[in-house]
Image (cartoon, rainbow, N blue to C red; front, side, top):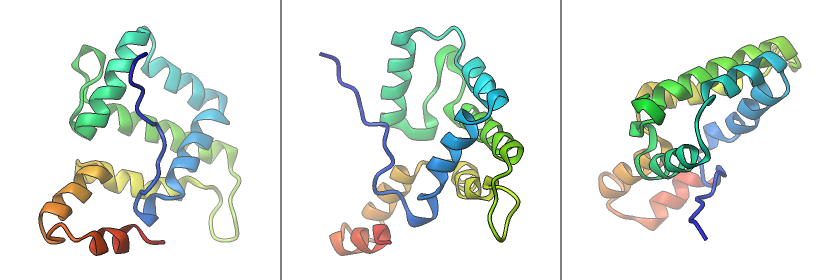
Amino acid sequence: MRFRPSCGADAVPPQLTCSLPALWKGLLYDDDARRGALALAAGWSADQRQALLLDVARSGLAASGPGGRPVAELARELVALADAGLRRIGHGGVNAPDEAGFLDPVREQLDLGRSPGQVILERWEGDWKQSGRRLIDYARY
């Protein structure tokens, strides 16, 4: 049996909590966004997808996809596709015409150039001084 890392988003910083459902909604509920997302991975074999999943689990945004394409670049394209999908769907609330704003924290993370896990590790080794209490406070909602 092969190792299959989790694709969940548990223990993310609070500002990213609504980002994952928004990303999936934008990609899966809109035909154009879904086609665009599938096109990004067109031609990748199951082994290439598995290798990418493992590389992302180890290296975060520094990972590379098939053909050496940076994961950060692929992620930006996925976010753009999801954003466009959410805008076309247009199910907003009282304060917004759509849910695209939920993707802003993802864009900020991509601009930072480090995954949430990398940020936590840096803080754990740095200003948190390996304090479990600081980690819990950080992840508390």
